[in-house]
Length: 417
Image (tube, rainbow, N blue to C red; front, side):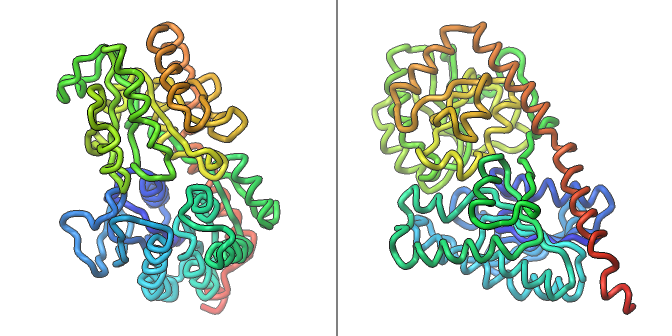
């Protein structure tokens, strides 16, 4: 089967949506499918074009997948309007390539990964012209997240237009998937027929992330000599609710035995560094390569997962799966009845969004109770094995993709040829 993927994030980016889109493409290639991907130049999470790349279209063959990287506008400070322009620029740049590959390579199946939703009509149009089935995979609800975090005013004309556009796009695809039960329910609320809604969970990299027994070697490499580490690793952006972390570190400073490590890059990094001025137990480190992922996550005694209030049912942080796979408990800022809250249940502690004191108290509680910490960590690993097996998730995707293609009967071009 020939599969064409359209998504703004792809390798060599090493976090968030890029990891899952790349994994899916390469796994389908290993199963004998012919896979092509149209994506952007790598820019995330630093919000600048990666070193060694320059504006323009660039083709590469990566692990059996034909990949075309397209130029785009990348704002250093992605406000609401600039973020829209960023996504529009990708949609415009990807349009000729996607249409050309669609008409020339004649895919059986087109998969669009959102973000960026603005580019979704490009994939939909390509599928229709090529006689292919089309699938939209929603990693997060960009429009509602923009409203919740203040990037867009939902009562303004741009906000109203964004909501109307979202509804129009969601109803056009043969299948629309997302990564958690509440997000699937939200798709149905937005008018997607129940029969078209499919779950496609993110998966844990269970081969790359295994529990570290004893102290991680990364602690010594970084010169961390405190007894405990509380770790956040991922994108440093406003929708993550990261402003709470310096306050948590300040509250934990009295202990003298815990270092709060923030690993990552993104538009909020400079702000977080400024907010952390004078706090002696907080460290900032860059993103680590995939081969060091176990050592990085195993450095933690407790993982920190802040989330903005109101966002926890609009997305399920992709970083969560690997946190659980590392066999360490997670302290998250979310209500227990959200998608994130339910995933954390019995694998860590949920605390109220925006409450630094409650988050610090939860960390205190776990650090002072090693048996409870080990019990929750073991449960976290078990949940990752049970719910986020890469093979099981991608088996289901392949089965559904093949079933959809068979359901429409012979492709018209194959009959005529």
